[in-house]
Length: 328
Ligand SMILES: Nc1ncnc2c1ncn2[C@@H]1O[C@H](COP(=O)(O)OP(=O)(O)OP(=O)(O)O)[C@@H](O)[C@H]1O
Ligand SMILES: [Mg+2]
Image (tube, rainbow, N blue to C red; front, side, top):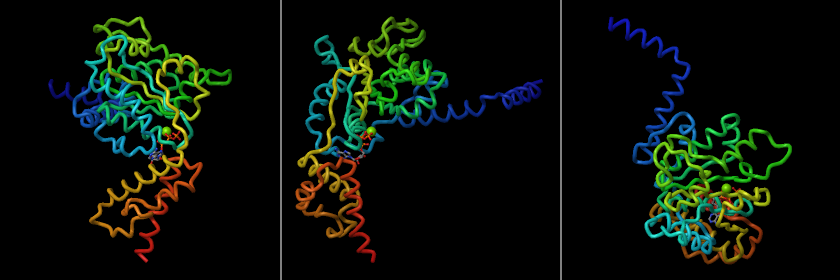
């Protein structure tokens, strides 16, 4: 009797069309718990999809000190975002209410994504990295459930930074030609409401659907610890309603001469640190990194128009030259 029941169960299991998906979900849940250092309850396949974009702050390898030339932004963000996220108990009044949306905008390669990651690390906050291009391809059809899952998972993971890279492609201005599903995603993102059974900490009691759209809810309760951080190099494409939700906006421009020197110095210092001084002859480090970078001011003068990313590329090529000569 028991034998036939077991065989029947095994056979049914084999026929389950979602068998592989379920096994994968279980594996990912385990992996997520390991990454975060605590178990997380994922509700269904949609949260499971979003969970793949979660990064443990401890695993982020860039720090604020690695970001060159953006001290003015870092200082402001520290006061307005990092301190409130790290010490929410001091920011309860309406006046001190935490700012809920931060937008970084500016030309490509200027360090927006890098800064966002470093911020998550500094806040010791879970980081959900949503790249619009990836999301849009996956989300057609099921946008409302996935968007709700983004918000619900973010609330489970508090403190949490929800980072939307290329935010213009996800929440850009509505146009006549755009795909219907894209419009649906935007609307859903702006108006996502807590579903029955969802009870983000500080937002409402278990099971009580909230009347406020979630984003507004996060903004107005002042008790949740979720930050929406967006990055774009096409700010002019953003919907007005979206722009309003980003209460703090920082332009990340191409670096000036002083900033270029700072980026060059930090990049070479990091390179030297990674190699380890004991493993390499000082003369093999490019551009005098070992002697304090005396050639860097000269180089910074001659790299007008370079982005941070271009400067790192330049250093990378320069770093390979002495190694090549050494090998030869
Ligand atoms: N200010 C900076 N300080 C140090 N490194 C930088 C800086 N800006 C850019 N870089 C280097 O360039 C790389 C790419 O930068 P990042 O991806 O953050 O640019 P971005 O502004 O997000 O660009 P995009 O708009 O194309 O997404 C970084 O990983 C880093 O190595
Ligand atoms: Mg980027």
